[in-house]
Image 1 (cartoon, rainbow, N blue to C red):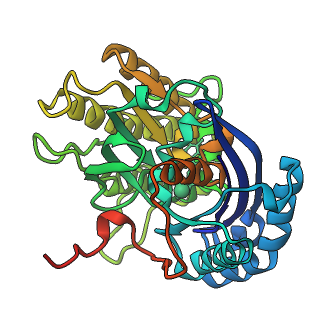
Image 2: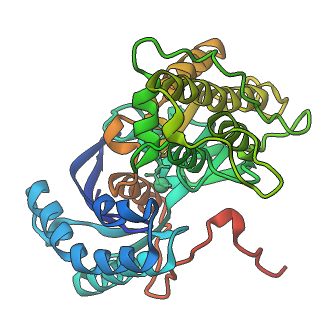
Length: 362
Ligand code: KG4
Ligand code: ZN
Protein backbone atom coordinates (compact mmCIF):
# COMPACT_ATOMS: atom_id res chain seq x y z
CA UNK A 1 0.00 0.00 0.00
CA UNK A 2 1.54 3.28 -1.13
CA UNK A 3 0.22 6.78 -0.45
CA UNK A 4 1.24 10.20 -1.76
CA UNK A 5 0.55 12.66 1.05
CA UNK A 6 0.38 16.47 1.22
CA UNK A 7 0.72 18.78 4.22
CA UNK A 8 0.11 22.55 4.08
CA UNK A 9 -1.59 23.37 7.40
CA UNK A 10 0.81 26.12 8.51
CA UNK A 11 4.14 27.30 7.12
CA UNK A 12 5.68 24.13 5.65
CA UNK A 13 4.76 23.00 2.13
CA UNK A 14 5.32 19.24 2.24
CA UNK A 15 4.78 16.09 0.20
CA UNK A 16 5.82 12.51 0.91
CA UNK A 17 5.41 8.99 -0.40
CA UNK A 18 4.88 6.37 2.32
CA UNK A 19 4.60 2.64 1.86
CA UNK A 20 3.12 0.19 4.35
CA UNK A 21 3.95 -3.39 3.45
CA UNK A 22 4.40 -6.57 5.48
CA UNK A 23 3.95 -4.70 8.78
CA UNK A 24 6.74 -2.14 8.10
CA UNK A 25 6.29 1.55 7.41
CA UNK A 26 8.77 2.94 4.90
CA UNK A 27 9.11 6.60 3.97
CA UNK A 28 10.14 6.62 0.28
CA UNK A 29 10.41 10.42 0.13
CA UNK A 30 9.81 13.31 2.53
CA UNK A 31 10.09 16.74 0.92
CA UNK A 32 9.61 19.90 3.00
CA UNK A 33 9.81 23.48 1.72
CA UNK A 34 9.98 25.62 4.83
CA UNK A 35 8.76 29.22 4.75
CA UNK A 36 10.71 30.31 7.85
CA UNK A 37 12.64 32.93 5.91
CA UNK A 38 9.37 34.57 4.74
CA UNK A 39 7.93 34.94 8.25
CA UNK A 40 11.10 35.63 10.26
CA UNK A 41 10.87 39.43 10.06
CA UNK A 42 7.30 39.29 11.50
CA UNK A 43 8.36 36.87 14.31
CA UNK A 44 5.38 34.65 13.51
CA UNK A 45 3.44 33.13 10.62
CA UNK A 46 1.50 35.63 8.45
CA UNK A 47 -1.48 33.65 7.04
CA UNK A 48 -1.72 35.49 3.68
CA UNK A 49 2.00 35.11 3.01
CA UNK A 50 1.79 31.43 3.97
CA UNK A 51 -1.07 30.55 1.61
CA UNK A 52 0.51 32.41 -1.31
CA UNK A 53 3.82 30.57 -0.77
CA UNK A 54 2.00 27.20 -0.57
CA UNK A 55 0.29 27.93 -3.92
CA UNK A 56 3.67 28.72 -5.51
CA UNK A 57 5.50 25.72 -4.05
CA UNK A 58 3.03 22.85 -3.92
CA UNK A 59 3.52 21.52 -7.48
CA UNK A 60 7.36 21.50 -7.46
CA UNK A 61 7.27 19.88 -3.99
CA UNK A 62 4.90 17.12 -5.21
CA UNK A 63 7.05 16.54 -8.30
CA UNK A 64 10.17 16.20 -6.17
CA UNK A 65 8.53 13.77 -3.77
CA UNK A 66 7.49 11.49 -6.64
CA UNK A 67 10.94 11.75 -8.22
CA UNK A 68 12.80 11.02 -4.97
CA UNK A 69 10.52 8.05 -4.27
CA UNK A 70 11.60 6.65 -7.64
CA UNK A 71 8.06 5.85 -8.76
CA UNK A 72 5.52 7.11 -11.27
CA UNK A 73 2.31 8.86 -10.20
CA UNK A 74 0.37 5.86 -11.48
CA UNK A 75 2.05 3.65 -8.86
CA UNK A 76 0.34 5.18 -5.83
CA UNK A 77 -2.80 3.66 -4.28
CA UNK A 78 -4.29 6.82 -2.74
CA UNK A 79 -3.74 10.53 -2.08
CA UNK A 80 -3.70 11.64 1.57
CA UNK A 81 -3.92 15.22 2.79
CA UNK A 82 -3.86 17.01 6.13
CA UNK A 83 -7.26 18.76 6.03
CA UNK A 84 -7.57 20.01 9.64
CA UNK A 85 -6.75 21.87 11.86
CA UNK A 86 -4.66 24.78 10.61
CA UNK A 87 -4.75 28.08 8.74
CA UNK A 88 -7.72 27.84 6.40
CA UNK A 89 -6.05 29.54 3.41
CA UNK A 90 -3.04 27.22 3.76
CA UNK A 91 -5.12 24.05 4.19
CA UNK A 92 -7.17 24.90 1.09
CA UNK A 93 -4.06 24.77 -1.11
CA UNK A 94 -3.20 21.22 -0.02
CA UNK A 95 -6.79 19.97 -0.06
CA UNK A 96 -7.43 21.40 -3.56
CA UNK A 97 -4.21 19.88 -4.92
CA UNK A 98 -5.00 16.49 -3.33
CA UNK A 99 -8.53 16.49 -4.76
CA UNK A 100 -7.24 17.33 -8.25
CA UNK A 101 -4.64 14.54 -8.07
CA UNK A 102 -7.05 11.93 -6.67
CA UNK A 103 -9.69 12.78 -9.28
CA UNK A 104 -7.31 12.81 -12.23
CA UNK A 105 -5.61 9.55 -11.19
CA UNK A 106 -8.88 7.84 -10.25
CA UNK A 107 -7.47 7.02 -6.77
CA UNK A 108 -9.10 7.34 -3.33
CA UNK A 109 -8.74 10.61 -1.41
CA UNK A 110 -8.01 10.41 2.33
CA UNK A 111 -8.41 13.35 4.72
CA UNK A 112 -6.11 13.16 7.76
CA UNK A 113 -6.27 15.09 11.03
CA UNK A 114 -2.91 16.83 11.45
CA UNK A 115 -2.81 16.30 15.24
CA UNK A 116 -3.60 12.59 14.99
CA UNK A 117 -0.86 12.33 12.36
CA UNK A 118 1.68 13.78 14.84
CA UNK A 119 0.79 10.81 17.10
CA UNK A 120 1.73 8.44 14.26
CA UNK A 121 5.12 10.07 13.52
CA UNK A 122 6.99 7.86 16.03
CA UNK A 123 5.94 4.73 14.11
CA UNK A 124 7.42 5.85 10.78
CA UNK A 125 10.42 3.84 9.67
CA UNK A 126 9.70 1.05 12.18
CA UNK A 127 8.92 -2.55 11.32
CA UNK A 128 6.95 -4.05 14.16
CA UNK A 129 3.25 -4.87 14.04
CA UNK A 130 1.33 -1.63 14.51
CA UNK A 131 -1.38 -3.35 16.54
CA UNK A 132 1.18 -4.30 19.22
CA UNK A 133 1.64 -0.59 20.00
CA UNK A 134 -1.95 0.02 21.15
CA UNK A 135 -3.66 0.94 23.43
CA UNK A 136 -1.36 3.88 23.96
CA UNK A 137 -1.20 7.19 25.74
CA UNK A 138 -0.59 10.02 23.26
CA UNK A 139 1.06 13.41 23.80
CA UNK A 140 1.06 16.08 21.10
CA UNK A 141 3.25 19.04 21.89
CA UNK A 142 3.58 21.61 19.10
CA UNK A 143 3.33 25.29 18.32
CA UNK A 144 -0.46 25.20 18.20
CA UNK A 145 -1.36 22.24 20.43
CA UNK A 146 -0.50 20.62 23.73
CA UNK A 147 -2.78 17.73 24.59
CA UNK A 148 -2.94 14.21 26.05
CA UNK A 149 -4.85 11.43 24.28
CA UNK A 150 -5.99 7.89 24.81
CA UNK A 151 -5.37 5.96 21.56
CA UNK A 152 -7.08 2.60 20.98
CA UNK A 153 -5.62 2.43 17.46
CA UNK A 154 -4.09 4.91 15.00
CA UNK A 155 -7.63 6.02 14.06
CA UNK A 156 -9.49 5.79 17.39
CA UNK A 157 -8.26 8.69 19.49
CA UNK A 158 -9.90 10.46 22.43
CA UNK A 159 -8.58 13.66 23.96
CA UNK A 160 -8.12 13.52 27.76
CA UNK A 161 -6.78 17.03 28.37
CA UNK A 162 -5.37 20.06 26.57
CA UNK A 163 -3.91 23.48 27.19
CA UNK A 164 -6.34 26.13 28.35
CA UNK A 165 -4.17 28.98 27.03
CA UNK A 166 -0.84 28.80 25.16
CA UNK A 167 0.55 25.65 23.56
CA UNK A 168 3.99 24.66 24.87
CA UNK A 169 5.69 25.53 21.56
CA UNK A 170 3.97 28.91 21.60
CA UNK A 171 5.30 29.49 25.14
CA UNK A 172 8.83 28.56 23.94
CA UNK A 173 8.50 30.98 21.01
CA UNK A 174 7.15 33.84 23.16
CA UNK A 175 9.77 33.35 25.88
CA UNK A 176 12.46 33.28 23.18
CA UNK A 177 11.17 36.68 21.99
CA UNK A 178 11.16 38.00 25.59
CA UNK A 179 14.81 36.88 25.84
CA UNK A 180 15.63 38.57 22.52
CA UNK A 181 16.45 35.29 20.70
CA UNK A 182 15.96 35.02 16.93
CA UNK A 183 12.96 33.29 15.24
CA UNK A 184 12.15 30.35 15.32
CA UNK A 185 12.37 30.63 19.09
CA UNK A 186 11.89 27.04 20.33
CA UNK A 187 15.02 25.46 18.83
CA UNK A 188 17.16 28.52 19.66
CA UNK A 189 16.01 28.48 23.28
CA UNK A 190 16.74 24.73 23.49
CA UNK A 191 20.26 25.38 22.14
CA UNK A 192 20.92 28.17 24.64
CA UNK A 193 19.64 26.08 27.58
CA UNK A 194 22.04 23.28 26.55
CA UNK A 195 25.18 25.45 26.72
CA UNK A 196 27.78 24.31 29.25
CA UNK A 197 27.31 26.06 32.58
CA UNK A 198 23.55 26.67 32.15
CA UNK A 199 21.92 26.60 35.60
CA UNK A 200 18.36 25.27 35.33
CA UNK A 201 17.82 25.87 39.07
CA UNK A 202 18.66 29.59 38.85
CA UNK A 203 14.95 30.46 38.81
CA UNK A 204 12.11 28.55 40.42
CA UNK A 205 9.44 29.30 37.81
CA UNK A 206 5.82 28.25 38.54
CA UNK A 207 4.37 25.03 37.12
CA UNK A 208 0.61 25.14 36.71
CA UNK A 209 -0.99 21.92 37.96
CA UNK A 210 -4.64 23.18 37.81
CA UNK A 211 -7.11 21.07 39.82
CA UNK A 212 -6.02 17.75 41.43
CA UNK A 213 -7.07 15.37 38.66
CA UNK A 214 -6.82 17.78 35.74
CA UNK A 215 -4.95 16.68 32.62
CA UNK A 216 -5.13 20.20 31.17
CA UNK A 217 -2.14 22.51 30.82
CA UNK A 218 -1.59 26.23 31.33
CA UNK A 219 1.58 28.11 30.39
CA UNK A 220 0.49 31.74 30.70
CA UNK A 221 1.60 32.13 34.36
CA UNK A 222 5.01 30.67 33.54
CA UNK A 223 5.38 33.02 30.58
CA UNK A 224 4.54 36.05 32.74
CA UNK A 225 7.02 34.91 35.42
CA UNK A 226 9.76 34.81 32.77
CA UNK A 227 8.75 38.26 31.48
CA UNK A 228 9.10 39.71 35.00
CA UNK A 229 12.41 37.90 35.57
CA UNK A 230 13.79 39.48 32.39
CA UNK A 231 12.29 42.97 32.55
CA UNK A 232 11.21 43.48 36.18
CA UNK A 233 7.63 44.07 37.38
CA UNK A 234 5.99 46.89 35.36
CA UNK A 235 4.91 50.14 37.06
CA UNK A 236 1.32 51.44 37.04
CA UNK A 237 1.74 52.80 33.52
CA UNK A 238 2.92 49.37 32.34
CA UNK A 239 6.55 50.54 31.95
CA UNK A 240 9.25 47.94 32.58
CA UNK A 241 12.48 48.59 34.51
CA UNK A 242 14.76 46.72 32.08
CA UNK A 243 15.08 45.56 28.47
CA UNK A 244 16.37 42.13 27.33
CA UNK A 245 19.61 43.92 26.33
CA UNK A 246 20.35 44.49 30.03
CA UNK A 247 20.81 40.72 30.55
CA UNK A 248 24.25 39.16 30.47
CA UNK A 249 24.66 36.06 28.32
CA UNK A 250 24.87 33.89 31.46
CA UNK A 251 21.64 35.38 32.88
CA UNK A 252 19.82 34.82 29.59
CA UNK A 253 21.09 31.22 29.40
CA UNK A 254 20.02 30.46 33.00
CA UNK A 255 16.53 31.88 32.45
CA UNK A 256 16.20 29.76 29.29
CA UNK A 257 17.30 26.61 31.14
CA UNK A 258 15.00 27.28 34.13
CA UNK A 259 12.02 27.97 31.84
CA UNK A 260 12.68 24.80 29.83
CA UNK A 261 12.89 22.75 33.03
CA UNK A 262 9.51 24.11 34.24
CA UNK A 263 7.85 23.40 30.86
CA UNK A 264 9.14 19.85 30.72
CA UNK A 265 8.08 19.23 34.33
CA UNK A 266 4.56 20.40 33.47
CA UNK A 267 4.48 17.77 30.73
CA UNK A 268 5.82 14.87 32.81
CA UNK A 269 3.60 15.71 35.81
CA UNK A 270 0.45 15.57 33.66
CA UNK A 271 1.51 12.43 31.78
CA UNK A 272 2.29 10.64 35.06
CA UNK A 273 -1.12 11.76 36.32
CA UNK A 274 -2.82 10.29 33.23
CA UNK A 275 -0.95 7.01 33.66
CA UNK A 276 -1.96 6.81 37.31
CA UNK A 277 -5.67 7.24 36.57
CA UNK A 278 -7.64 3.97 36.82
CA UNK A 279 -8.79 4.30 33.19
CA UNK A 280 -5.29 3.94 31.82
CA UNK A 281 -3.28 2.21 34.52
CA UNK A 282 -2.04 -1.19 33.45
CA UNK A 283 -3.73 -1.22 30.07
CA UNK A 284 -1.52 1.18 28.12
CA UNK A 285 1.41 -0.36 26.26
CA UNK A 286 3.15 2.66 24.79
CA UNK A 287 3.64 6.39 24.99
CA UNK A 288 3.27 8.05 21.58
CA UNK A 289 4.71 11.55 21.33
CA UNK A 290 4.71 14.02 18.44
CA UNK A 291 4.80 17.67 17.42
CA UNK A 292 7.58 20.22 17.02
CA UNK A 293 8.47 20.42 20.72
CA UNK A 294 9.13 16.66 20.80
CA UNK A 295 12.46 17.67 19.21
CA UNK A 296 13.39 19.35 22.52
CA UNK A 297 16.44 17.70 24.07
CA UNK A 298 15.33 17.94 27.68
CA UNK A 299 11.78 16.78 26.93
CA UNK A 300 13.12 13.72 25.06
CA UNK A 301 15.36 12.80 28.00
CA UNK A 302 12.65 13.16 30.61
CA UNK A 303 10.09 11.23 28.55
CA UNK A 304 12.56 8.34 28.31
CA UNK A 305 12.72 8.24 32.11
CA UNK A 306 8.94 8.50 32.49
CA UNK A 307 8.28 5.68 30.02
CA UNK A 308 10.90 3.48 31.63
CA UNK A 309 9.44 4.11 35.09
CA UNK A 310 5.99 3.06 33.90
CA UNK A 311 7.18 0.07 31.84
CA UNK A 312 6.01 1.66 28.59
CA UNK A 313 7.53 1.60 25.18
CA UNK A 314 8.32 5.17 24.13
CA UNK A 315 7.63 6.05 20.49
CA UNK A 316 9.44 9.33 19.91
CA UNK A 317 9.68 10.47 16.29
CA UNK A 318 13.15 10.79 14.80
CA UNK A 319 14.01 14.49 14.51
CA UNK A 320 12.97 14.76 10.84
CA UNK A 321 9.39 13.72 11.74
CA UNK A 322 8.93 15.94 14.84
CA UNK A 323 8.20 19.14 12.96
CA UNK A 324 5.38 19.39 10.43
CA UNK A 325 5.90 16.94 7.57
CA UNK A 326 3.84 14.97 5.07
CA UNK A 327 5.32 11.55 5.93
CA UNK A 328 3.22 11.42 9.12
CA UNK A 329 0.12 12.32 7.06
CA UNK A 330 0.99 9.51 4.62
CA UNK A 331 1.50 6.96 7.42
CA UNK A 332 -1.87 7.67 8.97
CA UNK A 333 -3.52 7.80 5.52
CA UNK A 334 -2.26 4.22 4.93
CA UNK A 335 -3.90 3.16 8.22
CA UNK A 336 -7.18 4.78 7.14
CA UNK A 337 -6.97 3.16 3.70
CA UNK A 338 -6.37 -0.26 5.33
CA UNK A 339 -9.63 0.20 7.24
CA UNK A 340 -11.61 1.52 4.25
CA UNK A 341 -11.82 5.02 5.76
CA UNK A 342 -11.60 7.04 2.55
CA UNK A 343 -13.22 10.35 1.57
CA UNK A 344 -14.76 11.76 -1.57
CA UNK A 345 -14.40 15.13 -3.30
CA UNK A 346 -16.72 16.75 -0.73
CA UNK A 347 -13.82 16.61 1.82
CA UNK A 348 -13.56 20.04 3.45
CA UNK A 349 -10.61 21.90 4.90
CA UNK A 350 -11.32 22.98 8.47
CA UNK A 351 -9.40 25.38 10.72
CA UNK A 352 -10.57 23.36 13.74
CA UNK A 353 -9.43 19.89 14.79
CA UNK A 354 -11.71 16.92 15.36
CA UNK A 355 -11.92 17.68 19.10
CA UNK A 356 -13.41 21.10 18.34
CA UNK A 357 -15.91 19.95 15.67
CA UNK A 358 -19.61 20.33 16.51
CA UNK A 359 -21.15 16.94 17.39
CA UNK A 360 -23.55 15.62 14.73
CA UNK A 361 -27.24 16.00 15.69
CA UNK A 362 -28.64 12.82 17.32
O1 KG4 B 1 4.55 20.69 15.02
P1 KG4 B 1 5.09 22.00 14.57
O2 KG4 B 1 6.10 21.98 13.44
O3 KG4 B 1 3.95 22.97 14.12
C1 KG4 B 1 2.69 22.99 14.69
O4 KG4 B 1 1.85 22.12 14.31
O5 KG4 B 1 2.50 23.86 15.57
O6 KG4 B 1 5.72 22.70 15.85
C2 KG4 B 1 6.40 23.94 15.79
C3 KG4 B 1 6.76 24.34 17.21
C4 KG4 B 1 7.29 25.77 17.32
O7 KG4 B 1 6.62 26.42 18.37
C5 KG4 B 1 8.76 25.55 17.63
O8 KG4 B 1 9.34 26.61 18.36
C6 KG4 B 1 8.72 24.29 18.45
O9 KG4 B 1 7.78 23.48 17.75
N1 KG4 B 1 10.03 23.62 18.51
C7 KG4 B 1 10.74 23.46 19.66
C8 KG4 B 1 11.94 22.80 19.29
N2 KG4 B 1 11.91 22.56 17.94
C9 KG4 B 1 10.73 23.07 17.50
N3 KG4 B 1 10.48 23.83 20.92
C10 KG4 B 1 11.40 23.52 21.86
N4 KG4 B 1 12.55 22.90 21.60
C11 KG4 B 1 12.88 22.52 20.34
N5 KG4 B 1 14.02 21.89 20.09
ZN1 ZN C 1 2.07 20.27 13.65
